[in-house]
Each structure stands twice: as structure tokens, then as C-alpha cells.
Amino acid sequence: MTRPDVVVHSGGDLLAAAAAARLLTKLVDAQAARGSASLVLTGGRTGNAVMEHVRDSPARDAVDWSRVDFYWGDERFLPAGHPDRNETQARAALLDHIPLDPARVHVMEPSDGRFGDDPDAAAADYARLLGSPVPAFDVLLLGVGEEGHTASIFPDSPAVHETSRTVVAVRDCPKPPPTRVSLTLPAIRYADEVWLMTTGEAKADPVARALAGATEVEIPAAGARGTHRTLWLLDSAAAAKIS
Ligand SMILES: O=C(O)[C@H](O)[C@@H](O)[C@H](O)[C@H](O)COP(=O)(O)O
Image (cartoon, rainbow, N blue to C red):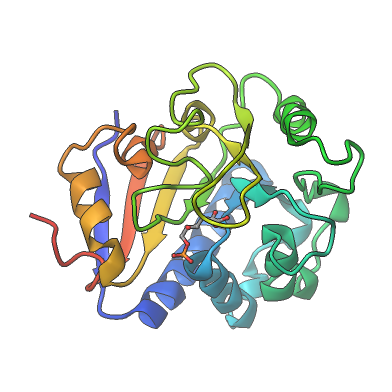
């Protein structure tokens, strides 16, 4: 099990800019090694800020975006194009601004998509798309919630207790909207590198608890680990309680 690396930047915008630079380099290296790269996107303010910095980076097109496979770690189960969908926000922040291959953008079905208002069917479909084993994603991006959630995996929830399925429907989610589709921790742990990115003093407690050995049931972010690297990218406020 990889021991987490922790990198702290002085402020939230610097963290997002530095994470964007790090991501660009990682994708370039993956493509140099294998010809393509795979990236799992996250919802949330920090994830969106990182994507905006990627979009605006002078180094952006060092990546051959047509040879990147994009996935999501979770999605809000809403109609296509809904402003609260992670996909909608990712397209505005980055995807609509780069020469990607649309066939390599793997979205989680919306609530008015092929499976209608059935999040279990949408989850099962995404699990089929991922295949078994799940791809060894080059980078899997995650945010962290104030009570320690990551993706849409919340403390002591059915999703955090899931040990076999790779993608599940999440209902009655404490963070709105209530219904979501999410990778599970077993799926997340197939990633080559997992980057947990968060800022602000409200995250200092879950960050410190996760890094101090909390269980994944208590702090799901603690269970998000990569096969080769687990990296916590924090601003100084979110890192303030690390012992
Ligand atoms: O769909 C979502 O809401 C995200 O996937 C969620 O896991 C998010 O990353 C965290 O809640 C942190 O969000 P912030 O970065 O906005 O604090």
C-alpha cells in the first residue's frame, strides 16, 4: 500500500495552478511512454479550478488531447446539460476548449439518458464500460468533503462498504444533489496515481484524520490510494491540522 505523499501550497489558487502544471507533465509523460493517457476527473470547486488552469496553461497543448481517455470519478444524476452535472462543469472548464476525441470522453449517463431515471442501471453501464479489471488510470483526481467524503462515497454509507462492485448508485447523498453515480474505493484503487486535492480550513480536520490513520468507513478519502502513488495536494489551510 502506497504511503501518501503530501504537497502543500500557500493558497488555493496556487494549489490549482501547480496541480494543473503537474497534471500536464504527467499526461505528457504517460503519452511518451505508452502513446495515450487516461484521466479521471472530479467534480467540486477544486477540481474545476484545476481544469481551468489546465485550459489556460501555455503548456496545455504539449498534451495530445486526442489521445487522452477521460472518465469521471462520480457524477450527479441529473438531466444532460444540467449546470450541476460534473460533466457540464468539466466541459465549460476544459473539455470544450481542447482538441479531444469525443469517442474518448466516457461520461456517466444522465438521468434522461439511455437508462432514464435509473441510477443503478447507469452505474452498471459505467461498470461495464470500465471493464474488469478497471483500467489502471494514469491519474485519478479526487476532491475531499468536509466530513471526509471523496467522489460520492460518504462516511459509513453503502458505497463505502462496497467491496466488489466498481460503480454504484448513491441515494440520499448528504451533499446535494441527492442522487449520484460513483466509483467505489475498490475501483479507485486500480489507478496508478490517485491525487486528492483540497483547500480551506473546513477540510483541515478530515485531511488530518485521513493522514493520521482514520479508517475509510470514517473518512472515505483515507481509502483512496493509487497502486504507485497517492498524492495529497493541499493549501496551507487544509494542511493546518496535520500532525
Ligand atoms: O460531485 C462532487 O461533488 C465531487 O465529486 C465531490 O467529491 C467534491 O470533489 C467534494 O465534495 C469536494 O468539493 P469542493 O472541492 O467543492 O470542496
